[in-house]
Each structure stands twice: as structure tokens, then as C-alpha cells.
Length: 157
View 1: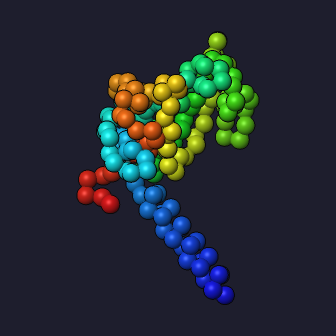
View 2: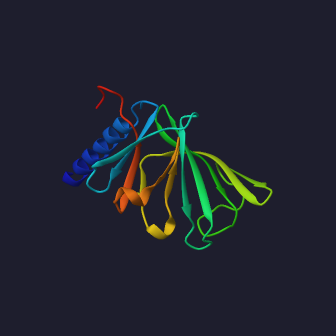
């Protein structure tokens, strides 16, 4: 009985956390925080479409992969992935929620994948870059891991 009550409490806490994370966000800026400390390192303006991209060097193909994201009412949504060489972790066919396209020498995967928390582990060899209004080399922030999140609304939680 005690275990059931504890599990119910954990489930309620998880639901409360999920609801809090699902609150509306303000468009316009992306906040980059060091992990695990949570210290804000930068704020970056989103591109004109309300989004941003992450570019990195794939660890096996050593080719650049670009992942595009958009900030929507409830948070971050991954909308596409672009690459020119297949490697582990990269899709090669249509799948649930994925539309795989070949465009000349490159591949483009369209999707609508909500991202609850966008966490990045940085490695200088991956050449991680944030592309929005301008380009930011993420290694220059001095953190080994980052969380990217929509900027909170003024006066919000």
C-alpha cells in the first residue's frame, strides 16, 4: 500500500512537471544554459521564421548535419534534418512522422517532433554551431553541456 501511494505521488509530480513545461512560451529568443548548473550563458534572437538550427560534424561520416527547430506555442519542435552522407542515427527512409527526401546530393528529412528538453553534450571535434540570426560556435561558451530553451515570458514563472 505504501509503495502504491509513493508511486501515485511520483506520477502526480511527473504530471505536474509536464504541465508546467507545457505552458506557453514567448517567441523571439532562445536561452542557452550551462548544464548541470543552469547558469545562463547566452540569449540568441531567433531567425525570421521563429526558429534556429544546430549544425554539427557527424562522428562517423565527418560531414555536417543541420537540424532545424522552431519555437511554437508549447515549446521547441524539430522540423527537419539535412545531411549529405548517411551515418549512424540518421534516417534513410520514410517512417512514422518522417518524410525522407533526396534533393540532388543531399538528404532532407521533414518531421514535427516535439522536444521536451533540448540538451547538448559539446565536443570540440563535433564543431557544434547554433544558426539563427547569426552563427555561434557553441564551444566558445565554455560549457561541456548546454540546455537550449525558449526565453520565458516577462513576468512568467
